[in-house]
Length: 267
Image (cartoon, rainbow, N blue to C red):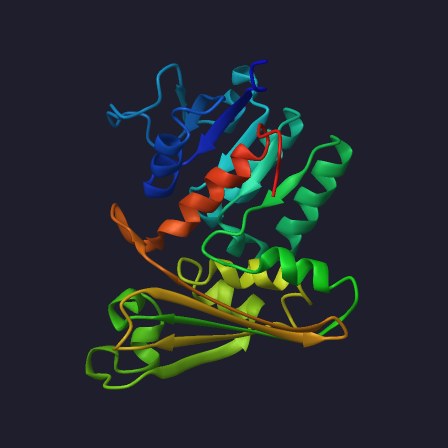
């Protein structure tokens, strides 16, 4: 018996989407479309048979069953609406878009009205499923520390909050609710909103950002406690070779989310 196939469209064709497509090459996943901002750029690495599109209005004609976003927070709302209206489920990687509560509300309503789902993939984070399960019994505190080498914070507001190039020991330069962290550091703190939405919400989840000159990986340390017990999870992510600012696990989690649509056994 042949495994069920699924028609997938990618929104974005950066390092995460390209890595995911490569890993899906021998699976029963058919990549039918890739959406990009500039269609004039030559992209010889597009999957065979995939249609290159640039406008949201072109998506429905490709008949996707699943649309996977990996293009940045500004793409989440506009492509989410057309995906759901085309009766496709929508996988979100740029979860920091939900720091704007109206985006989350609108996509939730669009998913409900079209009998579809918005799926927040865990990205570079471990422990999301346990955190979401713990919420059913009750969580009192959620704290999430994001620890990266100083160079990983270059080009962000961290440059004005600490002397990145002169650090000799780890420095926590930012601590705030998840909604503020995700808004101020969208590229480095996407997972802040994932943690918040899985647990006790964006306003109650504490995010601490750390620059560590001894670090060689991007590390996430998650702590929660409540009626369920206590959860402590840490993951040290290697960067994607094609984009050191993205964790390899972000692409791997996206692949797993897509494969779960076709795998006969899902963990």
